[in-house]
Image (cartoon, rainbow, N blue to C red; front, side):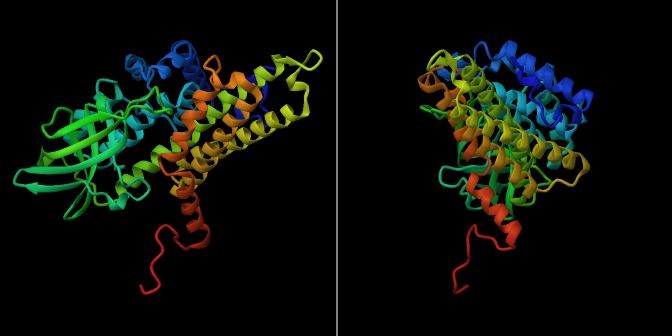
Length: 395
C-alpha cells in the first residue's frame, strides 16, 4: 500500500529546505512517541500534559522563530511546520506553544522594556515559566475594542479591574499578558501569578480542547507596579498584531489536524471490508470523500508555504493570514466530518482520533477570529468597505 508520505503529487516536500524537513520529522516523531500513546486518555480526563513542557523547550519549540536569548531563530516555514505537527497530534499541544510563542513572548519582545525581556523571555523560551494572553472577555470576543477591563494609575501602581474569559494556560501561567483600557487607550500589562486581586478559575465541562487548560481571569482591585506596563504598547493595534502572529501558526496547525483525520480515514477505508469482501475504499462514494480531503489539504499546504515565505520576506499582511486561517481551519473541520462518515459508528469512539479532532477544531474555528470575522476582514480587503459595525444612516 502506498504510504501517506508518498502522496505528494505537487512535490511539496521538495519545496522545503533540509532544515525544514528535519524540523517537521523531528516534531512528528516526538509527538508519535510522547503524545499519541496517551492523548486520548489525557483528553478524556481533561489533563494538559504539563510534564511535557520541559521536553518541548529542549526541542526548541517555545519561541522557535525568535533569534534572541539563545532561541532557535527559525524561519516562518520551520515554525509553521512545528505547529502543523503538534496539531496533527492534538490542538491542545499546538495551542500551548502558540500562546507561549505568539501571544506572550511576541508582545514582550516587541513592546517590553529591556528588564521585562531579560527576565521573562529566557524563562518562557526554556520552559521555566508559562504565560497566558488576556484579551477576550465574557461579553466581548470578536469586538475586543469594547473591553471593560480597566487599568487606572494610582501613584507608583496600576489598579486593574475586570475579567477575561476563555484564556488558554490561564490557571497554570506564571505571567499573564493582560490588555486593559486606560485613560490613554488600550495598553498591555504583565501580571504575575499570585498577585493579590488576581485569580484564575478553569472552565470545565468542555467538549473541545479537553487536553488544554482554559481559564477565566478575574482582577479585583489588582495592584501591579508601574513598571508592569508594556511601555511600547499604544493601542488596540498591539493585541491585534499578536493575533496575526498566532493566526499564522493556526493556519499551519489546522492542516495537521486535517492530515490526521485524512490519514485515519484512508487507512480505515482500505482495511474495512464490506459488501462482498471488498474494502469500502473500493466504492466511489468513499473515494470521492478521500479525494476532496486530499485536494483541499494540498491546496492548504501551498497556501501556508507561500505565506511562510512572505513572512520571512517581510511581505506578509494580516489579510493574507486571515485567508489562510479561514481556509485551512474550515478544511480541517470538513475533513473531520468526512472522516467520521467514513468511519461510520467507529468514528465516535476514542479508538480512533476522529471525534477528538472534530471537537477540537470547533474551538479553533471560533478562536483567534471566527470564520465569519475573517470573512469580513477579507470582504473589506476586496471592497474597501468595512462591514464589522456599519455606521447608522444619520452618522
